[in-house]
Length: 375
Ligand SMILES: Cc1ncc(COP(=O)(O)O)c(C=O)c1O
Image (cartoon, rainbow, N blue to C red; front, side, top):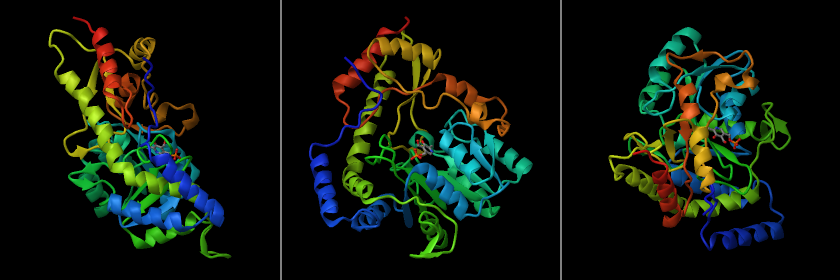
């Protein structure tokens, strides 16, 4: 059996519905800023309970727009977790600011709150980017939000992986000052290409984001800011509108598969040792099932090579801390005590997880893990 890490399985009537919409767009020659974009706006706000949404070209632009909208620029310091996708780091550099990484907490794999407090004292940052990695978030997100509000530090939440997740019973973007997402096809809400967006509960910031993503426009040929072209086109908007109708089902299906993996682990014979430890999101978080999260008892490489022989493809999201990337050069400052990110990057292994996984697929992965067991 061959099991991919990700399979973008969709519902039988999904593609026909998208095709019908795309044909209508073609017939009307409506490609930019059309009806689908308006529809997407309404639907996504309804789903996320956020107050404002601004679609843009991708999740990296969304971060850059958010940083620019709150006034982060040349030489401002921005804190970000050492454990994230490189785009979070790039966005800080691309607006001319200086990134400082903060190590993660071993309980939730997100920025460590105590180290964050140390970093605040040392660097006086203008903004923080928290990354809701794996569709999880910091168990101390409420404290991060409160602290930043009181101290007038802008908190940007990189929610590229977190649409549909809940924190303390609330949709994750509902109480965010400003958050971003990515519609990269493999994300929980994926487009048929690139796409992204910004959520904010502040109407003024929303207005600036709208303008920045469209050449800083105040009118068709009036430019209040220097922005750029980061619009989401109708092809993507139509696809996302249809996908939103199925999003709750897709998330439920992901979560069911995740649950089956965890049940396998908890029912596993106690005299045998699995080659990995599967993790569940901490209890404050109801995740969207974006990724299955495990720690290899050896290393990612060793275990994934063994599973690959059995036809199972795993992920290693992510294999390197930001502070260790060649591209960071000398801008690799890290606030840490035990370099947790370095250890986690080496051991993290993500088992196959995607919408509508078949029981046989999950059972095959579990059986293969069981075959690798030591007694
Ligand atoms: C945490 C995180 N931030 C930002 C991005 C960037 O999104 P995009 O690829 O849409 O630019 C991604 C996507 O891979 C991501 O996972």
